Length: 165
Image (cartoon, rainbow, N blue to C red):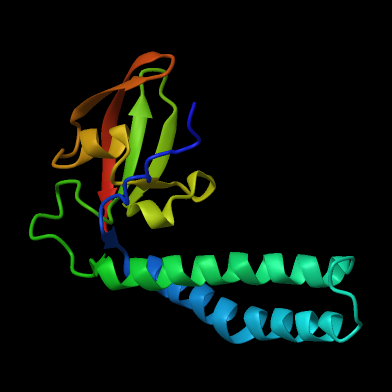
C-alpha cells in the first residue's frame, strides 16, 4: 500500500477583492514579520551549541519549513487567481460574489455569499463556488426553488433575496 495521495484540485481561480486582500496580508505577515522572527530564534538556538538535542532549534527549523511552504503556496496561488470586482450585468440573478438569502421548507432562513475556494468560511456564511449548493444557486432568480443533495438526503431551498456588495 502506497502513501501517495494525488494532489487536491486547486478549485475555481476566482476570488473577491476582500479575499485577495486577506491572502496578500497573510503573505506579507508571513514573509516580513513571522519568518524574520523565527529565523532570529533559530540562529539564537543554533548558537547554543549541540543542535541534535536542541528542541528550540528543531522546532524553529520545522516552523521555517511550514512558513516557507505556505509562502510558496500563497505566491503561486495569487498569481493564478482572477479578482472579480465588477457587478454582474443582471443583478437579479445569482452569480459569483452574491449574498443569497435562502429559506427552507420549515421557514428557517440562512444567508450565504458565494466566494472562491480560498475564502471559504462557513461561520461567516461564505461558501465556495465549487460547493454543490453554490453550483445549484448560480443563475437562479428570486423565488426560485433549489434542490441539493446533502448527506442527510435531498434538501429544498427557496431564494428569498439576492444582494451584491
